[in-house]
Length: 168
Image (cartoon, rainbow, N blue to C red; front, side, top):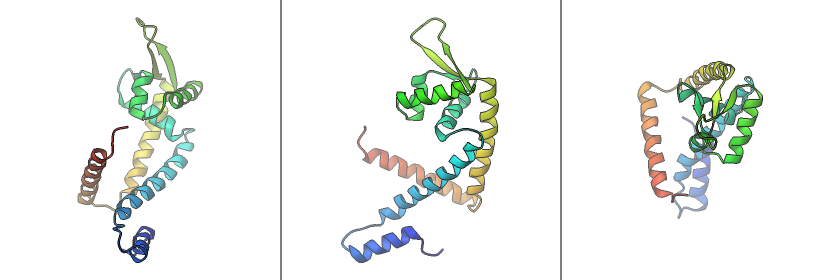
């Protein structure tokens, strides 16, 4: 493999500040670059379905929850890691587009649900299949062993970072 931009950044810092260990940039710089590349491709792919990454996330969240494909806004917010205001705007758009409907809890007026409509389920099933095909093609250059190694290393890194970062 030839030297890439991240390698160059690490080498530049080694020359300019040899007293510092810039090797973490090799990991976190690549993670950011990979995330940016994948996110850019995802945005373009989802646009063909009239979706954004945020709306895709909500539809996937409802779909993977199983029948009746319904969750409360707080359940969605907790797993989508967004503010209630951002979630409300996403739900409003999805409802306007006929992909979800809001339902009141039959016994508790304080509780409401967001629920996939048949059109929303059909759309998310199609979009998800293509999304997973896209992600599979991005990993095509890795052997099964390489994929397991990367997955294991990333899980370990996530755990290590989570332990090191104070709870917010």
